Length: 353
Image: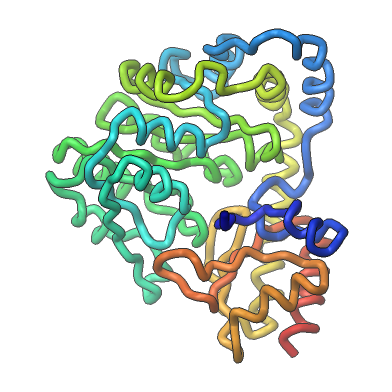
């Protein structure tokens, strides 16, 4: 079985006997918040009980955090779990995705025999989502996936265009899944979210604790929808205890970590432009993304060898060779702390020059 994502630290450890400096996973560079770690430890006392299958306490706190009724929330075992639950609940016949984008959309769709139509984003537009994506939605499409900002490009789709895409989906009877898992890294996230559009069309918004709170190993995500029947169907599409009691405790604690989130956003605002400039100084083409990661291109001889050369030196990037719409010359790197980013740049310079 081939793993198609970043973050395979265990595979690296098995091969090299040590952990890498991992830029392949787009999670908070500050690690797990202390308050979350303490909450997980405290929750061990109740690990002999089944978890709340409805995540009641977590949904109530999330409702206050997101400004929506608790009935519009469904928690899952990470965002990927909710993607699969949505597809299994709706069983679309044809779906539209951008290319490139997150691989799990197509992976989930293929489990139900759905035809996956890809709208290839243009390199000349820096892989931005344009009106062409809206134009690709028609009556034959049952479901549309849009990542905001997109993974791996970091490109943000203007909210006005998101609204037009939702309007087109609703007119054609298609459901729009808007993946906002990376949106909260942005300081202006509140003005960019599509939450005000809930209830005005066929919209499901996907979010996760994984990225912002450095909780990838805990597995906790949630969906927002004004359609309770859809959320009920998604809940019934998988096992009833999809979110562990430890994950629920972690989520409750994470929502109190406002100072931690402020530090993460400030760090990224400082380090993203510095890392961008450093990569460009090495002769790399870097897209102007808004997320906590950057997409860059190396056009040297044998571009696919860059990632392996870095691996040998203990640094791991995300090769984008398996993204439809990209090739082996493209790599994605997380934005991490200043010293870590400097090590990446130093190691890249050793390999490239």
